[in-house]
Length: 235
Image (cartoon, rainbow, N blue to C red; front, side, top):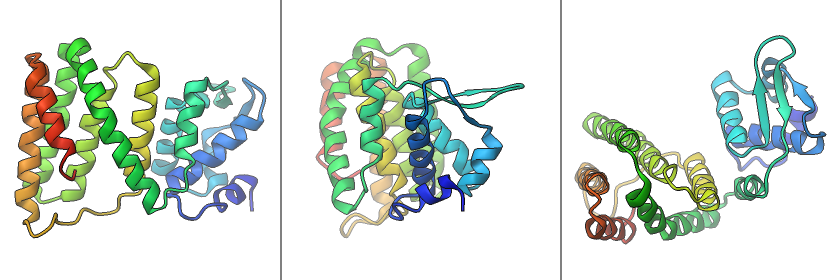
């Protein structure tokens, strides 16, 4: 068994993506800044995960500033020197994500949403709004197909697109780390109370459409009212 495989077995409560990200992250943190960790193929094989799972783990690590990836001869994965902000994101990712941790992550995410909406009102460009509308399109297509889980994942991508507008690096890092934690531990979506799930999804779809419309026209009162409505009901 490889060293990376052993590291991945340390916390079976994590998803395979998280296990791979944590194992490679620990390897990078123990290496000198700029040290070559291996090729993508070598490290994927050592982790024993599928290519898609491995690439998602790399995306997480790159966004945290833990590794850099170089192509061409002599390329591969290299240890970066994570900033304090990156280390903060890593600490969130390393939570054991028991049910209470995920519930707490949702509460914190909801509390941060109004701050990100304020930043989106002040800083979003036409390109940013287009990205948000693209996520809305995926949400609509998922709702039409009756795929509740994909609807929620597209919902998170919308909120990630809103978060990326923020010039506040600390706020953005914390929020995106929370989304990663929540997403990686969501397997399915259940009906809300006694309401039919399609009815609930349609309501949430319209709320998010209205929210992006408010951001587009810089309607501060409407945007803040909508995010309050969003966070006082279940997502």
